Length: 393
Length: 129
Image 1 (cartoon, rainbow over the protein chains, first blue to last red):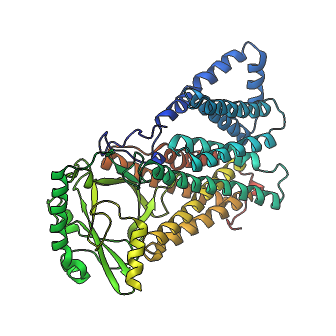
Image 2: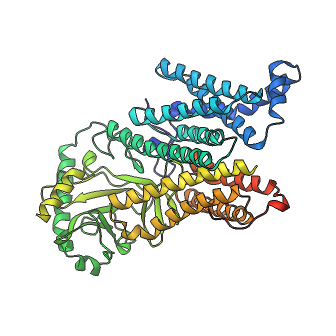
Image 3: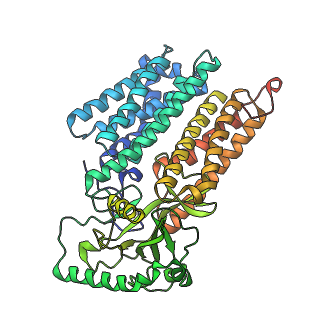
């Protein structure tokens, strides 16, 4: 499976994001199939004039109520996607499963258009298709925009199919609960799959061919740093250690412009708008952000974040693979009050009252805690938790 | 027509519930729920309101119809704000799924509601329950 995919325009062609927010190249044929669907529909309309099955299909479609017409279109779109995906799917067994899914979807569509009972068949086929996707993305396949859009279409059709014809209150509630549960399960599975993809891609969330959801990074490959790069990285780190020591006291940091108010949690980022706008790039003693952890003994300075001033500028890789910069995409910022509220949901939204920041400039973490396993980049979560626990004891 | 709208709004309720779970997890795993408290409450309240509107649509409530239309308009406006940010900040567009859920779906709901005519004798008020 190729994990490199269409990139955001902001950070250049060498940058890679998690498939969750992009379309995998091998899923493009599915979208192309949807794009040519109007031609197929026009062809059916033309054939209908000659009589036969096409005429029966068109005659069956016209009297359908709005919700059944909707289901018909959703089934057709999903079937088209699956047929498109079957082209060139690897391994061939996967292609065969796509064709089988498309055939089942078209079978349900045929029942609907020819006036047969269709709801049970639709419920079974669509539930099976959604659950198969859930299992696939958790186990092996990266969730991407094409897959999630297809499941969205199927969930919409399934929601109609599950509505009971004789609408007693318990039945209606059960149908609603089933629909909502499938939406939530699919969304949570997409998160699990996206993080699992990053785990499979590398030893941490930033450096693999597929970084963690919301992270953009250029792949660094397996190249080891040169001696000069190692020395440059160590020199920079030493200067930062000396310069940042005074910010162990948040009051000093506040006096220099860092926003330390409301410090909470183990990964509090105190930004300094003044340093962000001072025109200095990667200055070891003037980082744009300080990272603190709140402990029972008070605030602990963990490290710093250096940020580039704009999206189109790449950070200096003074240490080669040791100084691996990354950026973020699809970041949710709540306005009530301004704070990071997460990442864009697999179904496309941020929490209510939030805006979506499409991409932020490149940044790099530097760690100042004694014994940290790395100077730059991701700090191992287990190590961080253990270190903070040792301070509490 | 309203039956289809109910289903679509129900899906949006599912998205909102997922969003509530996500912001709770984000708050608990990164910093603390404190700064995110208002956002958590607003997202959870929106989820509840969405499900209440599904019920209101089922009773052919006139108020529910208008509230749904207003809500969908708000979703479209917020999507357009995010689209503007994407275009001007990063030179990109909304992703495929956000385009479907935040532009196409609410537009479809509004179109369907505007096409639907409520029989005068069945109009009720109240969106609850």
